[in-house]
Image (cartoon, rainbow, N blue to C red; front, side, top):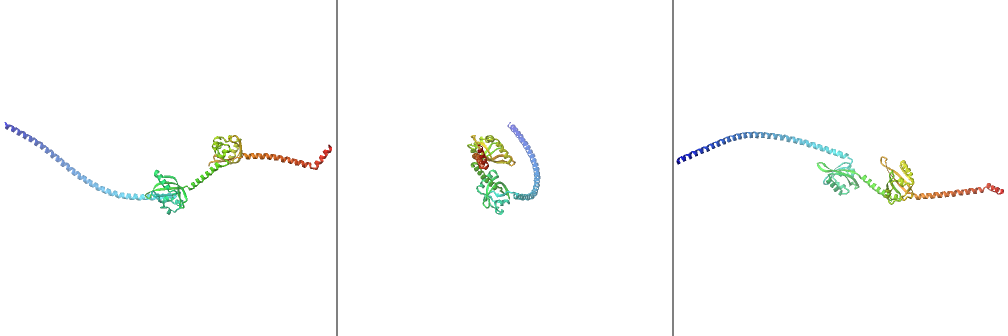
Length: 380
């Protein structure tokens, strides 16, 4: 019984071993196929890599050749470009100099940091009274009348990136005052960032403004303090301006009160409105009237005499802007003239009566009159 069991076990073990051997055999066959596949794949990969390496080597050679050619070409292009750029720069600088020299305004190029003058056109020498050789290399700050103005200009430039129409006081070589309008822009000059400045001399204009201010102050003083009444009026009959004396002549407390209350000169001022028409006709024909005498109303209704001298103010095309003139109160003079006229009339009467008496006396003294007188007495 045990022998049979042992035999069965042996058979089973052999069968198991055969099964394992079969499995191992299949495994080996699979591995052999995989090995063959890998060897084939490796062979193809090696062959392809060799081809790729060769292709890469050829590409490298081609690229190196292309790079060399490109480098040579780029160097030639760069050289040509640089030459062209230099030529353009030279032309630009030459054009700039031609423009600057032809410009009737002083033009300066100065260093951004310290204001050293690097370039100036010819007219600048006349403006500052210096030769170009003495001007180049000087600092712009040397010509500021007020040194703090440079900081103000730099502050404006920092804020806006430019300076436009800045009125500035400068000084010439002889230390005389020079008024200019400054315009400033950043500018590349010889590869350096600089300031390009253009100056417009306004000294004459400033002098005229000062003269005008003095004249205006003088006129204002005359206008305010004149004894005569001074006025400006429209054709329609409104006052544009009157001085204090004018208001006093017409009895108003102030010039402002008179200008507000008088809205029709012909009706409110003239005693005889037809005199206004005569005034307008004369001033239209002659451009002015001189010593035009007429009666006017004061604000209290009292009548006075005035003498007016006026002229028409016109614009450049001849259009009337307003009338400007003076009024003088001649009431006392007119009263004196009337008194004198009356006295002359009385004197004339006395003179005439005296002459009659003299003539009568002369007649009575004649022989004829005496004979006639005796004949009359004899007949009585």
